[in-house]
Image (cartoon, rainbow, N blue to C red; front, side):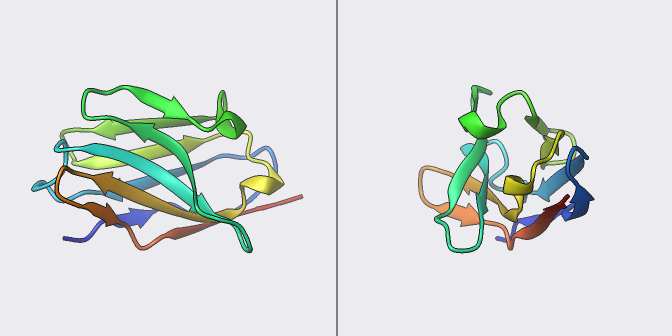
Length: 114
């Protein structure tokens, strides 16, 4: 089972990016999904999560700027990132946690410059 993340890139501060993660149908909707990120020299942290019953939570640092969503028709987990800051620079990973195990995408680089 592979999660395919895309949409990363380079953007100036204040700009926007949209990340997408295609989740295999065998696990989509069967657990909680989230976006994590890891900046150089830092621990991986959760950015935004959406549970199986669509409860949503965000890290304080991204509240009001990032929006997590799921597209049930396309089995896709999305992250709309607006008003990007230098400190948002990181590798972003999609994550699915089912009852049996946790799955990770391969990571997509987001670089925010001044």
